[in-house]
Length: 105
Image (cartoon, rainbow, N blue to C red; front, side, top):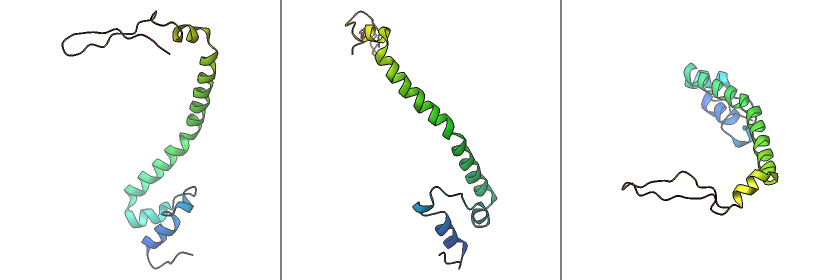
């Protein structure tokens, strides 16, 4: 149980503990203790993080799908197993000496 002597202790109880990481933020206490600007920042950042959950899941699924499909692709296998047939853009040093790297597996 929180000790309700002051708002700092309430913030620590409802917001500053790891066991409260998946709970909603106590925006009214934050607003009263830290001000409206800080409370608005935390409200927006909480909304933004929640809004990015679905795109993050889609991105991870797409990445895993790409890894699986790349291992099956004939084009990828051809490039990776080509030895020195497919040159990449050459990096040059400050003396304009360029070396041509190749795709290697």
